[in-house]
Image (cartoon, rainbow, N blue to C red; front, side, top):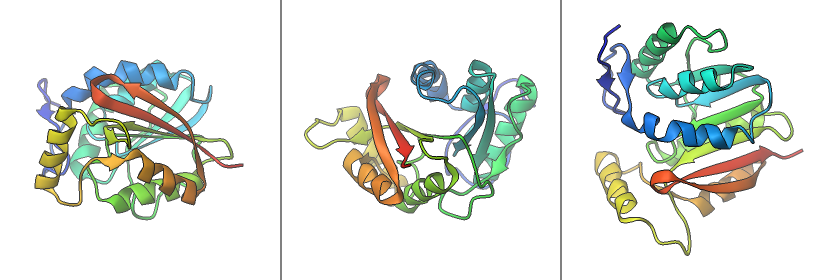
Length: 214
């Protein structure tokens, strides 16, 4: 394990290294915790889809010690980073990382809540559709799906920084890019998830909360 983690870059390639660092996690993690305190169940299994570097999983597991946290990611480099952060944190409620592709078959059948941060715009649309389908299948009635990241909204001016970010994402992969909140909500409803709340977050991000229909 290195003392200076490598920068985390989603989709950067197949190389596998140790602990990695995503600077955005330190900027948004406490704001996300504040939202989750009012939304998460008091106990049970929390499934994180697309855990990336693993820093969020460690921070959230420490913030919610009564919740069992399951980090996942499809990328072997991410899984290695999550495992390294987990080993350092040594938290009893943080499970070993599991490989999960949101667009594929899920290796976990049930979860009491599901969290996905900054995946929807850095993945093909089919990954979001898979996330919504998988969440609807895994969650109990009333179970939470929490999404965080930048989105566009009809009738709301998109911040210039988000416009530039969207262009940079599409330059890296034309299947990536900021999604419209309205499209995500429509797809969620089709999957059996009801929008509960939209919360504006720092740095022009949004929290989208959905509940599985009874």
